[in-house]
Length: 136
Image (cartoon, rainbow, N blue to C red; front, side):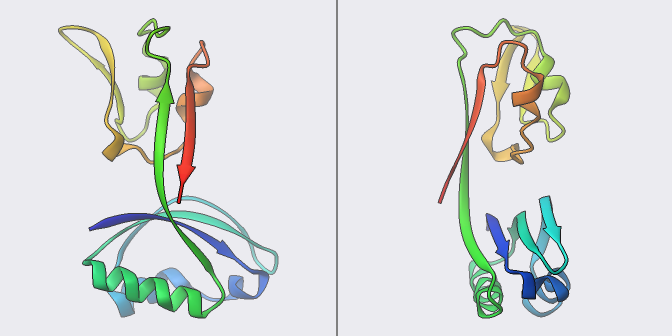
């Protein structure tokens, strides 16, 4: 099972190495997608975790017990395909391959499972057709 989690770190939780503990003690495979944390000040971290569901739940409880707020995220990328000119700017900037344009139709395709919510599509689309929504 894979889950995307948004972790909110209070200042006092920034002095510990939680990623190491999650891997070592809970056998979680983690992928840090985005992090904005400053030691002693707190911050947020977006990560994908892959493991059996019971391991993920135990890891979440461990983080919560140390004051970290944990929110499960589902992300939705929306774009106005009726106005899309299939220029490929978004696909060429997508590091995960979630956006692609391929033969024979040369139309933009979106694979939500591959999306890592990097927001590069928002910046690269000249028509500003993309929006991203996080839901808990």
